Length: 152
Length: 131
Image (cartoon, each protein chain N blue to C red):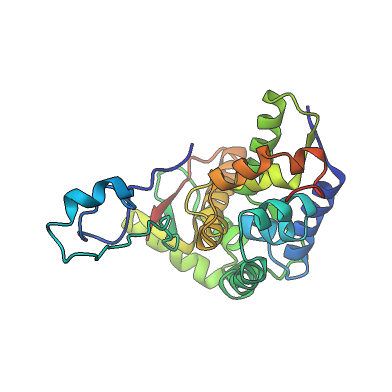
């Protein structure tokens, strides 16, 4: 099984923390995407796809703080990932396994988000005119495969 | 896995057989429009805001009323009175609405409720429906 890269591990923790600090009962794909903006591997791909990360962040924050108010719960339980969140991470890992790679990065998780239906995270990415095809094209250019910083 | 972009929301707009035709086609088409004009049709990927979904409970003859009330309190943050009212609605009308959520949240709630009911061996059905 592929393992999570150090960056990805931190990003997943950040996604849960974003939900916890707002007392949200779930960590959703929007929390995940917001965390991925600060993930070096995922943000390199988004930048390469010419997404405006500042606008994306603003959209996600206002969605999370306004539209997800219903998720605020009084019991001090830990936020748990939604079914979609778990599926996305699983999809990324299974894909890398079949591609014969040892490590999953934030960029792989970003690509896996696109398969989710009726997702606001996908909507916000589309709003930046970014598609799954753009993302995988930029990833096969090299960059992320070698650790991120070399991406154009 | 990728979704097709055919379901545009724009309704019956102008038919553009293939957007951004190359130059090679210009000669044939010029006769129809004014000379030198071109229509730039940029195909944007469909960016429709995702719909919201209702989460519903369905009536059955075996799940105890108290269990339904408990589910409403536990998974839908209802106070006891509201939970009781929704439960009675399910009981009398066969169906009752627990809340309206995004697809992602609705799906997770449905899974949680179904798992919880199964664990306690009640046949309670929880479903979601596009709003």
